[in-house]
Image 1 (cartoon, rainbow, N blue to C red):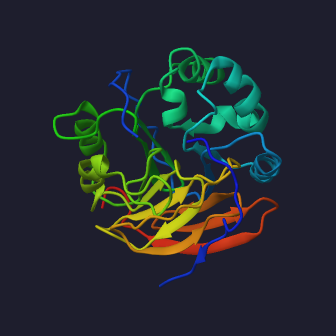
Image 2: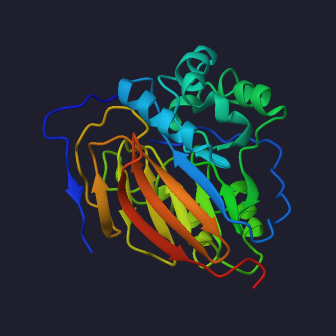
Image 3: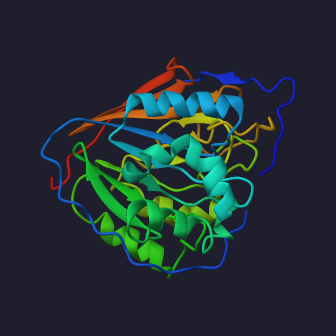
Length: 287
């Protein structure tokens, strides 16, 4: 979405696009489970080389996270040049430790931008969906730009990937199932959301250029972390889920401190100020 910052774009609430055609790629395999070590993971989406975006990226890089979860969108259309000039200066130095999920802006040019960039940076093709383990948690990288409904390959994969007992899982995909932002709830992702219920604990998305935290729903907690520096168009919408925190003004990222059975999740502004803190508990994998 192209947007511009307008007056009155600040809204703090502290209350208790159509998919592209499907594509296929090799499925990511899980790494061996970490043995109880704590880990710090950061997540951000919708980054841009604005002044605010650069300051936020510097904050994330300085933290030296063990993993960066990039929640999608390289502007304007995810060409090779835009990956080189608008994404790489921000987070390219963290590429080897990044798990990306594609956004709607770059998906149309995926074969000239997204896929070649990550193949070169990682030394292997980036799958459309994959799973990785860190800090006693499993990250399920999904793809909101391809079908995830009944009979889809992605839905079947997600069910298999989350079949091991336990709920210490984080799912990431670009378009959020629930959002009070410009795009609103993404109803076409409902079956994917339901497949994760009782099998995962946290869902991270971007797409709307703000920060949001929702009350638990179906055992899942949705966070929208699309405040990577792209200006926001403040047009709040209603959501079927109950929002607990919203910030439509400040650029920010999520910092997740993981350990087996628990995660602390901070929404952090450029410079490191914590805007919102929450925590979740989960049932360790294999139990």
